[in-house]
Image (tube, rainbow, N blue to C red; front, side):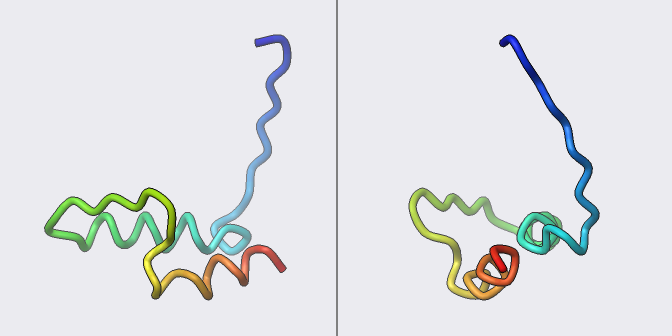
Length: 50
């Protein structure tokens, strides 16, 4: 690796990561998503893109 750059993004700037982290804490089972987000997080993802 020749170059590395870290940028801090507050929780409000990355709602999808925050929502996924909350889901992990509340989940009793292990979930794996390979190609698509869980349907309830699609809107959160689209909000982060705008």
